[in-house]
Length: 254
Image 1 (cartoon, rainbow, N blue to C red):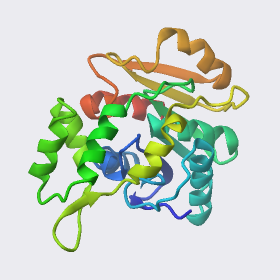
Image 2: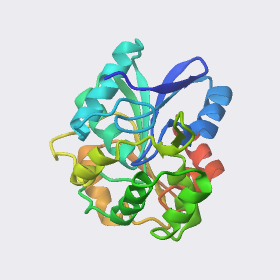
Image 3: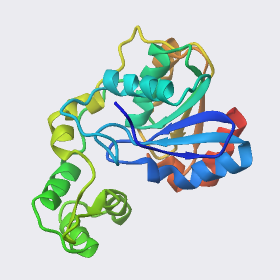
Image 4: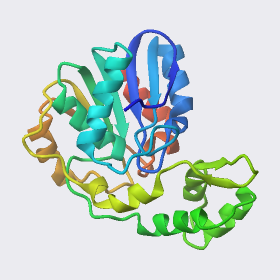
């Protein structure tokens, strides 16, 4: 698998993995800032079936973790810092556990290694409606999505997946069919025997319930050097909602 990425700056390699239905562009602002101010080489990666990376029929954390190992081999990277949000956080956790000699530090953003029930059904219905329509503008797409999703920021996030076809209409970048067929995989727990014993940071949004207080003991059993930081008045997209606070916590950890 040859993943698409945006590479910014020079220095120690930091790989950033977006969440479900996201893409590398979601992290450009933070990536540019980290590269410029912290002398890092930042790799903003599109995971499989997302962004400009290849589409396949398969989608699992084992495969996505292997994709990261292959990406590092292709780019001659070692001693990486690996950061992931949500689905990307689970990919990062498993990649660190499976390839511990590759990862120096791990940052996990608002996700735990536990099982999560599928909860993206309404979003997937909205994206399916987009895929079934000849879209002539982003405004048309937003109007259709609004019938399924009331929150404007969520719609704007999802509309980043639109791309213009040669004939002028729009289509989706994500491999929607594969993601719908593998939706149970998105919530799957990491096996309990998977551990990573190096420095690890878990960042939680104060208004998010993805990481609960009772999850911390289980996290520590798999990531014994885990530190926990909570950012007040932030939800699941903590890095976007409270960017400055998030940036400071990451830099302090690094």
